[in-house]
Image (cartoon, rainbow, N blue to C red; front, side, top):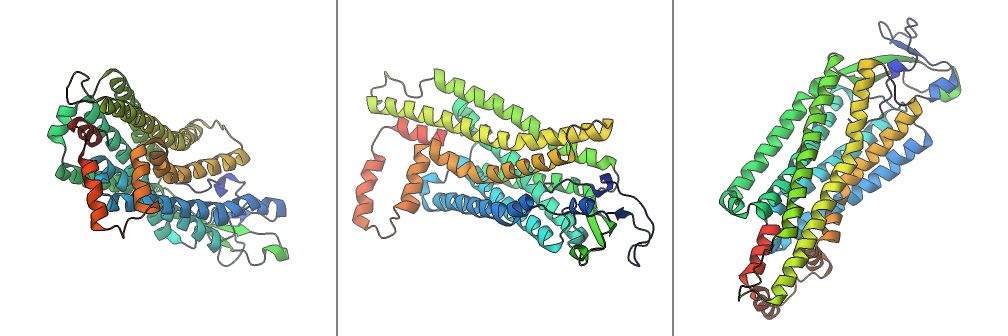
Length: 394
């Protein structure tokens, strides 16, 4: 899904017969010209990104998402329905980063050819792509579930109160992962065939130890590539439009509605100020989270769409060099998308910052019972309206 899309059959492949005893009945890539041969290899930039940049980003992303899971596990008030979805999103991001980094590193170290998956075989084609697609569909569904939960909590609080609950949340999460895995399985025919190719390398010392046979993951039939592209684009763009609608409704509702009635005797000036602060934080968090997710993903989906147009019409929008640059940019954006979500939560929402501060920075493991008790009255002070706000908006 995220590998460099350099199809050797588009690079002047020609069947020049048998170049070795291993190449009978195989398409032969005539790369006896050294400059042409080096186009099949990883350049310095790609090597640096695969061996240094992506593993570093992946490690940072895993640590950041793991810290969010730790905060929710440790701080009881963070165990909300919304955070149940966000925890699954964090788990999905961790698994994506691990899978994508492992796939890229394994391919890089198993062959010097930038598209070669012959060593990992059909198992690698199916397993890595299936997992990455599963996490892709799961992330879309989980972001949408978070938006839907907030939409009901703010725009239809009574309906949200009637249908919310731990059992319903658990069922939705189970269904989400089952559907995501099913959608990924439907894409398996798009990369289930390992296409072997024989390479006729230059007769120089630099290429003496290069593999005679390389391979790439291909669909069972060419048209299934288009089916796979459509199956990814439709859920993404439908979810993006739906999330934009829900975010717009939420922001408009927050702007015009008083969550706390100022005429209520129980509502103090402090509570009203608190409501306004929460209102701003939730709006900022909604906009930032949605914008970050869809901006990081949309360029990949647009590229997929343009690739479909190219395959159907023959119109090429990018040169091979431009394709490499765009694919690496998209890959970096996907890694960034799986890394920044907890950062967005902490930057835009004071409650998340406070929980992170309590759980990690100022660890209170050795807090005495008396100190714990001294906090409780303060936590329990304040009117019911504030508690309702925290429950519904988080």
